[in-house]
Length: 164
Image (cartoon, rainbow, N blue to C red; front, side, top):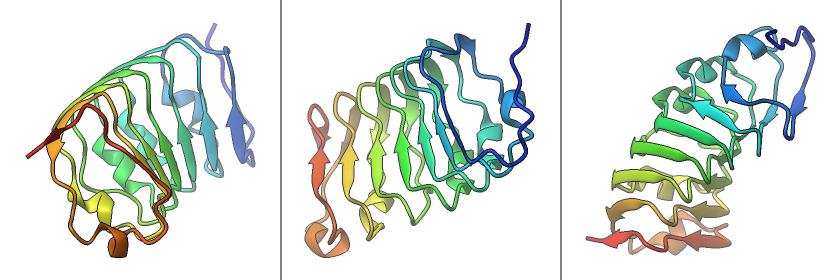
């Protein structure tokens, strides 16, 4: 039996230990007003559907501590209102996209299997408060002017990343 939500004015959906298996965005397709999607610790499997980029009012996307695989959907860059992005503790692979909302304050992709260069674009989001990319296989260098480009930064965790 497929679980579905038909609340048209739902703003926040936080479910703990509710789902398991693959994410199907059809569950949320009627929730155009959704601002918070937190599915932490739900044993979710499979890839993050690219249709997630259609949740145009989304401000908080938290899918940490699941079993998600595959690449980071570039469509997350379409979420122009996104302030919190937390995909930590999954098995996501590939490169981290370069396009993100200019509203992002918290960016956590820790404990995944990302590769490639750390996108310098995240260091140009002036409201960014915290960046966590620990325990991935990304490379790169920090901008010399990081203090001026990220005036609000409170936490920067890049442990187990490679300096190039």
